[in-house]
Image 1 (cartoon, rainbow, N blue to C red):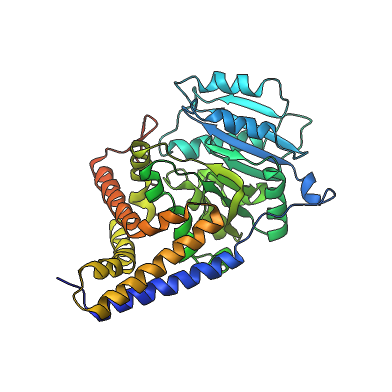
Image 2: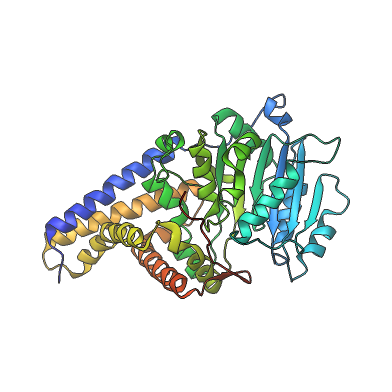
Length: 391
């Protein structure tokens, strides 16, 4: 069955409108400022919190970058979360006698009933940070960091300046995403493209609506006051996508949360190859849209808007429908190009945008299937959510 010209036209117009929205968002997307030597942000007491479970293969660059930070009031707390690959010993060797670093052993304290592993690790880190040893100041700002992130040497100072200048209680500077293998190049660019295209960023910072929320736990800065007020990770202990859940908790408590451009602050290669990518996305995509029905609706709409026009370009018989399909396809590619140029991604990979959407469809379907079978695991732990009863 071939799509009619009216349907293809509607999809093409939607693709064009969303690309125009992308351009608007990128024009107003916050960047972290470069503070002057006397800027008060340099006196902000910052504690970086780094959970690490079986990260021996990639944590060394992260730790080296942390040791190079130029922020004057910096403390780093690392949690070896029951690793079995020697992560703890590697961390101790890497940080040496640097007095800014504290390394915690979390092997003796596994997640309690009702807690997932990542929120529990972050909770323990925050608990340690907010009760510093005698004589050390309590932090003004907590920065949660993933072990696969490499910061620029001035990143922490600029993040502190960003939080101060923006008035955000939670700021999520999105790192530059490194994609090497074909599977990574197909899927990873959708991360930044998705919120740049679908989320009205200025409105999202002010709104308390849960649907108007984006965040990325790779680099997530939250004021100590907002963390306490929101309940911290105890509030999101059962959430697989705990970063977005924490941002929603901050907003529910009257705070402001927003995603910002962290391209020049940090880099991150989330997954090294197809197997790791599939495992990582299937762990969480089943819950990303709220429910299977929500996933079907959201992905169905994306598929119509971004796959139907190029499909019409190929299969339609009349030239008018093919021309409309070509226009819709080029509008979608233009949106991806805008985001790639801003985030230093591969511009040429935008040509595969329809295939990227279909890959997202397949990963979400696989994630829902594995969740229903109870077959999801992450780093040796089952991903089973024990939500508290309503009320």
